[in-house]
Length: 196
Ligand SMILES: Nc1nc2c(ncn2[C@@H]2O[C@H](COP(=O)(O)OP(=O)(O)O)[C@@H](O)[C@H]2O)c(=O)[nH]1
Ligand SMILES: [Mg+2]
Image (tube, rainbow, N blue to C red; front, side, top):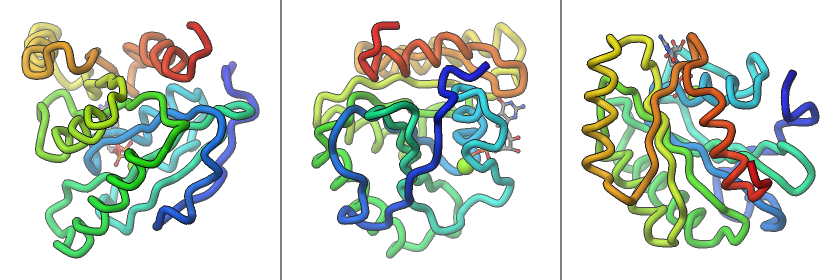
């Protein structure tokens, strides 16, 4: 059963004035297009189709606010990484995200979704920089771990841990076989301050 029986979509924002009221606590989830962010959110919230999974990355992307419980939110941040994203869209994305990280008092943590086969890219390093600028704790889900052999996955984990050192915690994850589900949810709960 879902730990979030009342979880629901609240609204999408394309500009800071559309962000929901900055009260309570929230955790942001980010990842490059196609990294597996929507799939990871669905597993963590334990609802099929909660965050829409899509096989066509690159469409206009918004900041999506979800309520998990009263005064606790999950915020699905727009990703890019798809070759066709224009410079103008990338600039808009940068400003929107920069505004979001700098202004949100309720923001308590970042979950960054990274395809374990791809390692960290510019997008991921930019997200880490946004988080560090405001002293936000970050946790990386190296997802699609089912796509690698155990030894390869362990090596990939070590590489990311080595690059980030103390700046983030890192784990393997798979939406396909639910590897790392509990660790991911416990981190979400820790960021939300619910003491798990
Ligand atoms: N094998 C495998 N495929 C995954 C996993 N997570 C996501 N996918 C697939 O990767 C593609 C992109 O996933 P999606 O969640 O839509 O990515 P998003 O663009 O980051 O939201 C889809 O075809 C998913 O089925 C995983 O853990 N394992
Ligand atoms: Mg998605």
